[in-house]
Image (cartoon, rainbow, N blue to C red):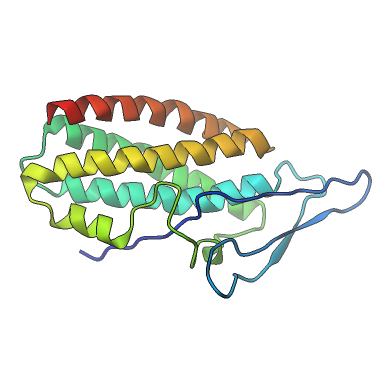
Length: 201
């Protein structure tokens, strides 16, 4: 199975200047530890419901969700995994794909588009799995796959919660803030459920 892993930075510094009565343009540089940073780009925030924190959160959460779905698909493709674990994996998949669609819609509405350059070359962080992590899950036998999935998804969820908390602190768009708050609540509950399952498996 082809494994696609997008690396995210563990955090991002976001600054938005607001000047009354005039157009404000914010520049967002490449944010990884790569030798050549990603190209800078500007976004006008005049009369916008969103700010740069919202854009950063959405652009980083899309690939984060995509990897969670990939992880879920891997464990769902195994036989003999605890049905409670596969049920959780299906729940994660069912919840996060609509959120991906919603976030892409926001980027389109903002005229930003899906900026792949935002994640290219960014350091491993925010709970994202490495290529080796994904290979370990993919190649695990059925007896181990469920436990590996739970260990990895707990870490993955913790990264998403950190990102969502930063959005709640710095974001502006009401819809994006609502999504971030939902991620904090739902994924915190899922982490607790996964910890219980780990003690069983």
